[in-house]
Length: 227
Ligand code: CA
Image (cartoon, rainbow, N blue to C red; front, side):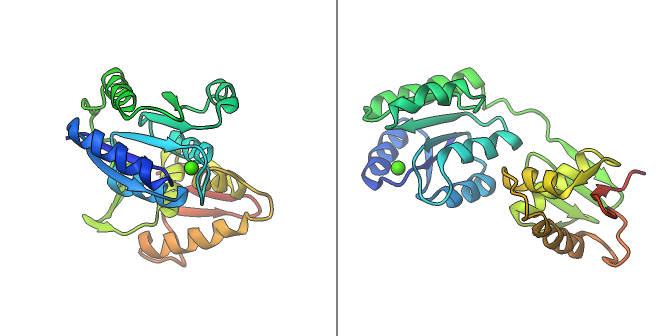
């Protein structure tokens, strides 16, 4: 059963959409806030996202950008800001389609069907797994194992590890890592990366004082060990 994630703060709208989508044979999960929506997306791996533009927490544009960095999941934007539509489509935002509010729930179901058919989400590619030493990183399932044992990483830690491990030997600045992990990078916040790296090392490194996977490049940033 294909799973739809609705990120929307108007509860009446969610109730109606849920009922129509479930009748059409989809399974529906829901988040009210933007940040909660991103967490549900990471945790529940839906097949399509219905994304409201104006949300508490993180706004819909930022959510779409963050999702696009890591996945090609179909995104259908819901918006009442009709004046924003051109910009939405024009910017390489990565939304697959948009629906302007107010809309009929039938229209939404039809668009969901069309987008899923077009993107063929039911045909999934082979899982992409990176194996380095004892560490195995499943990029699609967002799963990390050390010596066969699954590790509990936060979404930020996973994003950092995935970015570093995808290009072993490449040196990343803190600002670049911030951008990979948060979707945006503000100068002055680079040091938060050090805290995330420290936590990540505590989870993946046999000896976090003598790291063998994530190396510090003094004065620059970090890189993943190249064998
Ligand atoms: Ca809203």
